[in-house]
Length: 179
Image (tube, rainbow, N blue to C red):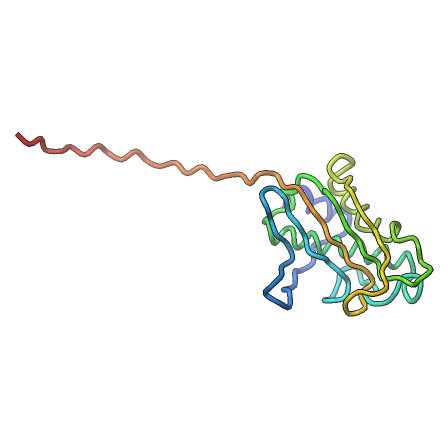
């Protein structure tokens, strides 16, 4: 267990299982060089950690505090996708950016405080230098399946450690000299 998973465990949290996407045309994560791009991780597709309210509108059937926990839950699912994609959460060097979409009632305008549920978790896990990130938090009129929210993310990775394979020197082959 790496440093990040140890921190999660001390916080009383664990990484949930990942779930396959319903179509082969998309995936939870795509790596390009040392950047990892995560698809939207929302509350409406599968069972979520932290016993959250998965469906509804913030400022309507879902409170701001419940939505904050939804964002934290989505962040845990994002961590599961990162681990599946790169094998170890310690490969993440820094959190670059989050983009959070909040399914909310027309008069709700505290989207930034909802998405803080994810931002606060990443900040706590990676610290003030590597956990601080750029972010957008917007309110929208609806999400697939009535999900409370959806969050996308971008992460910088440490270079993958290459395994050094040492080859034995082959014995010299004596060749017959032709005369």
